[in-house]
Image (cartoon, rainbow, N blue to C red):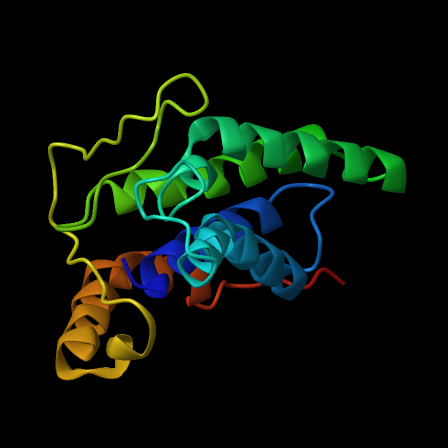
Length: 175
């Protein structure tokens, strides 16, 4: 999957969080949660290190698992607690955003599946609903096929983008 759908999840989560007490400024939250939505794809480095795709450290391996999302949430929780900020809601939201990455990738039309059960089982899975076109990797993303995948993803996630960026009405001024 290209990045548009993953980032859409992050900015939607940030928009939702912004309406709750104790939230960060919306732009900061959007950048942070968008980055977390992409974190599982840090495993693309494995291709450059010669690690096979099918290895737990390979693409869509351990970093796409719920266990990894929980670990990230624990780190976020600890960092927020140490900074004196409210932690539980933001850590749970971060966990869900990171976990969404594997779920969305398991809905794509290609690849080897997602290692949902890491570290207990290296088996990879797809969800029964596979309607998100798989994105080509690397520079091939700029090919005609890659651009068509980006367009399909933009259309698929348009409602999420609209929710995230649609202007909100301001509370009436009281005088």
